[in-house]
Amino acid sequence: MNYYQNQFSSEHDFSKVKRPTKVLIIASTARSGSHMLGHALHTTGSFGFPLEYTNPANFKEWQRLLKKETLPEVIDELQARRTSDNGVFSIKIHYSHLKMYGGFNGLRALFPDAYYVLLSRKDVLKQAVSLSIAAQTGIWITGQKAKSDSPKYDYIGIKNCLKNTILEQASWRYSLATSGANFLEMNFDAIKSNIPGAVSKVATFMDVGLTPEKMPLKPVTQQQSSELNNLWLNRFLQDHSDEPLVMPDRLLSLKAWIRKLLKGEEL
Image 1 (cartoon, rainbow, N blue to C red):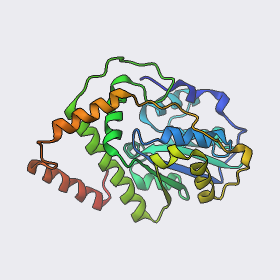
Image 2: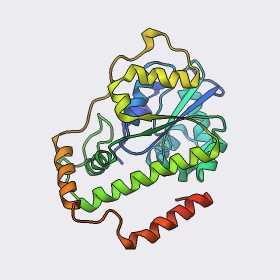
Image 3: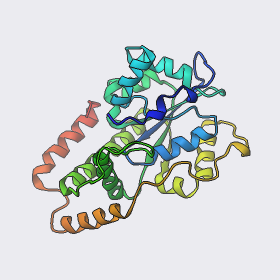
């Protein structure tokens, strides 16, 4: 696994606390800007350090480092270490990570009064292209070492990334809307164009006090998209132009997914 190694450093630990008073869950999908928002929130010193602690690969490493076995044990220890001095603990979770919790109900049982930021991108095709590239290079966050310097265009791969992203985003939206959870919707483009405004919006939503000197004035992460993203996007649009949006043989699988979602089953 090509870890984002910096996440495990003890330099990001805060003074130990028994329990956070507030929990923020960034409900995201891959390449939705959660890294950008999470690091911006982290620089304030008032939102803990929002990371993908329960990404399955990351979680195994946390188990090893913390010498803990179960999910509640690992989360308890992470909360003790990564809760900021004002009592806020934050975590980034993709919908696919909910398997770790036994589904959305399991997540709510572990974080019963959490605040949620539902993060999305308006241009979901760009997100899918970015996801396809990252999956091949292994670079999800700036600072990771590439496992491949020569990603290959893959029409089917991008199409699957697009479908999965749309389904995961819809699943988050459905789960949050039907649970009565306290959530705030935020958009990648709005965050990117106004980092201080985005951080202020989250702080107001959670009633977290921030002094002006703690407010980040610009992105603290580097843009990863390049001309390759645009080349793949245009090629995908060209390849897709003669193909129906939804093939008849896909309708049954879509209906099956909707039935599972309505029944609250794991997708």
